[in-house]
Image 1 (cartoon, helix red, strand yellow):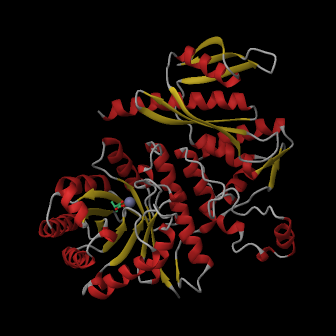
Image 2 (spheres, rainbow, N blue to C red):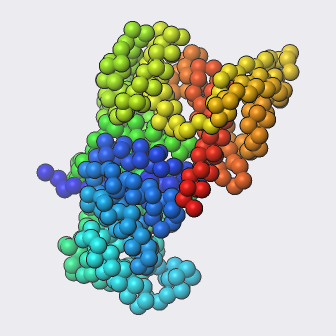
Image 3 (cartoon, rainbow, N blue to C red):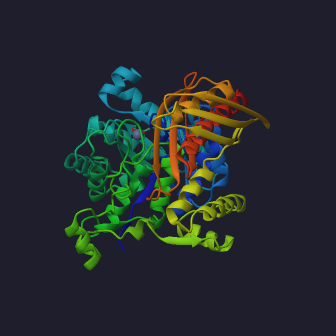
Length: 509
Ligand code: KIV
Ligand code: ZN
């Protein structure tokens, strides 16, 4: 049996540091549940000292998510570590992940510390963390730009102090694969007590090499890879989990290791992350992009029809892609829907299933055949639901090349109905002006996109907006066969999120 690579997912921590990708407590918990289905080994749930909200999310996940290790990040100081432990302590096998920079650039300009001070603080911090748990990870921030002999010295000392994982981050995405492989080989050859710890890598994608660097590190002996779903993360992102996992699975002849990830959950997990964060996946993204298994060229289509492996190195079903499956119709029952949803890689509560079933029935009244993509769109829409202060009751627009676009909107605001109308440059502008007037809000629309999960003119329109109000940026989703209605719903979803965010921060202060 080949050796195992531990998958450390940091979508909820480093992934969330991606600009505009913030998630609320419920969304983080939902994603943590999906990571359990994926069967990753460790999830980094957040940075508890960063805010009361972050602390709460880590505590909630550590206390309620079972079957994997939950990690919390802490800088190398007692306050951070104590706070991390406070959030993690009810977990099954909680991990304190503490970090300190080791590169001359960081030590001189950021930390204003010399090597001896950094070494001393790293050791003291790991010892402090080890009083709480034996599951301690130490990261040498900016390791790839550090003097490697100094990193060896620090790693040897922190292992001696109790670290069971030593992580070598490429914080700035600077390394090249050959070089990164060499660095890991050097560490393993030059740290006398390295057999007492797992060597981990954490690559950023600034040069587009995070996955290549992680694979090179594995071939040199690294046994933990830190990564995120869809490669989400600061700047150009982190190592994409789906890419590293599928590369290992597809090329055992070149990377003789395995992971325990249940790859059939990759596609639903990617959709979930993209929906929750409002960060679309580029169509040509490896593994999870919409075109990753699409064959446009006639020669390719012909080849795949004759024998799939002529142009496909992976089976789409291996990542849970069930594209184009005709699933259900008007007469399908709740049970059939539940079965299908499970095959698609989602796990819903009974209440969620009830809501999805009711919307499925509404759609089946309009359309004869319902596909997996339709069900998936409804699931996503239900998953991102938050309490609704503003509810759409009805929406009518008049538009066309000869008309002044006009919208008439009826809303329920805190249970009370209100209606209004406005004109605009186009039907969406008219709708948004009316909604702003009725709700008395003045948010700025930063981004608007309309797409559909399934193809065809009768597909459900999926609108994503990003709006800003008083420095707070949120996303909003709306789903409807009518795209103007979907746009109205997306805007209201964004406004509801702003209210929710405000209430949450009042609760935390
Ligand atoms: O990129 C980095 O160095 C990090 C550390 C905190 C592990 O995210
Ligand atoms: Zn990072």
